[in-house]
Length: 291
Image 1 (cartoon, one colour):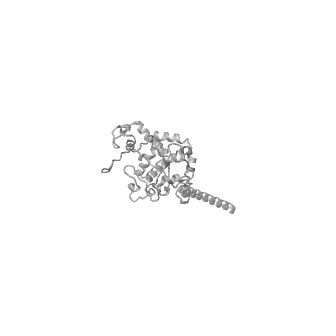
Image 2 (cartoon, rainbow, N blue to C red):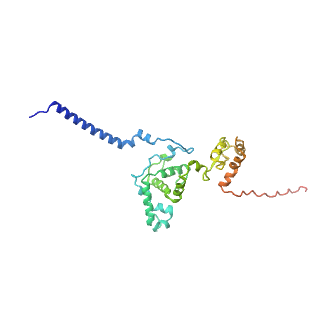
Image 3 (cartoon, rainbow, N blue to C red):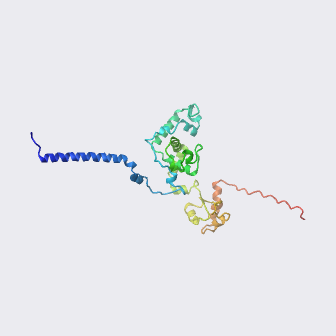
């Protein structure tokens, strides 16, 4: 029997070790790739971003959802149905027969619209999550539910809410609104404009309080037609009833700026084209007094 040389054995052993090492490396790398989204350090790096604008008193960690955005792997077809179309458009507009969620047979265009929403939802629920989070913060109700506790027992904040069919339906229905012409056409035109142009347009209005000493500089930058006076009445630290006097004391507030901030801008915004002065009634003459 012919024996192999030591060099041949060494070469064979080295080849086997390299092959084993390669397999282990590929397996480890594959597991690392599949587990990467769940690793805290990597997840933190992905979630962390730069906040360029913030709503006052709105904390995304509290007012935002505690779960991630979802899309393609989610069963979106269970989140919207004929009942949602009835609530959005009315049974007479979407049901070929029937009028309730249970017996509605959708018109073909309604079915096509619903299929389009499922495709859109497969790409994620950015608008739905953002807008429902904002609605919670503003206290806007949805089908009789207003606070997180109305949705899930024990939930004090939006971040406490867990994934559920009811919540999925809420997010999906609000997300679908962006495809309506009333929303889409408005967005399409406004997306062409710069933020500075939108801020200076009639669709945006700001209010100021008496202690806003930078008010003249703000008016110089965004225009004197964009800011209205607010008294801050009923707050314990307000300047009412002297708040108007305090606004007039701010250095740099010209007569033209005061005229717009203290009345003209509000008159135009609320379309008070004619200001009606209260009717003056003649004082009754006191009885028993000599003329």
